[in-house]
Image (cartoon, rainbow, N blue to C red; front, side, top):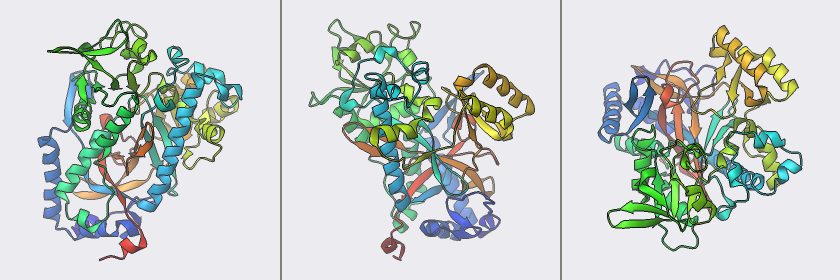
Length: 487
């Protein structure tokens, strides 16, 4: 396959697998040597096999459009993204530190508000956040943990520094695709798993079930369910997959009711049966029409009452989205220092808070160079990527910032790292990010690696599958000297 690789050139970007043209990093040497030695026809056949695998197993995602909901095969690139285990060990510690501080923050603001009283975070930043729920005041979930499932997005800059781009704490998605990517890679490139010591990821469903069970320490065998908005939701494949893999009952809101005793029950052909733990994949706004949106047909009337009474555990807890706010994101390093008395292991991307006059002046002066994000959007929507935007779009955002500066942050346009990717009939560098998944209950578990997302369009920084992005299997590779010297 040498003819495909011969022109591969990462340019000025940090390459995840190579430190210079034709020069693999030590931990990726065996991977790239194996791929380079493969005949082009054989490699093409493996690519086609991976596509057939995804189709035959029904691995899809949904794109919402004016024409309706369009199911598409999950976009998967056969060339893995590899990370040395020595680096990952530090990253894992940083992720655990971060989620620990975030959970302490959420517990604090719904109870004593010490961080606000100490002047670390302005009160209006918290109480005016779209994710803040006054209905959660005074609550303490099991273990004091509000965000039980977190998907933190990591990006690497041009100098190799790994940053946390954002914390996804409400209903983070993508873990099923991480697991399916690994299954597909093992089937089409099985030889590589004999050449390299790659950390497994298939224990995630077991860890998920254990974490959920720990939310009801008063019960030996709690009944656990996954609450889905239904088949038309873009992540329904994942909902069904995780329910099956983790042994959860897959339910919609109409399948549940809250009794006069404040317990949650599911409707079965044998009558009502109690549900003790709910892994919800529905946003706060829709979870309980008695408390939030009265027009919601997705949630369960009275479920907030049941949760507040301690009759049901909900993961993630209602109200945890306050820490998913992109303005509050800027204060996470201060949270770590305040609650843990530690310096952050993983840094934030440098961030300007447009609520601050000095920061706003800087942002307005450099708008065509920056990325601007609203506080509560996700999926790459509602944001400005200055260098890739028209002059009209830049001016549109200038007006938004002037009229509502508190709702926006700005960040430099990072030179995101790249990884070799199949592009038509050749191999080319494409920008990537990484979403590891963190489970928090009575302990914290971090997936070894996560979902690597790829901006498949040349030069693009948008990795979201809904906007044309793809994905890769992520390998945490043992780079110890003993292992690297083995034949």
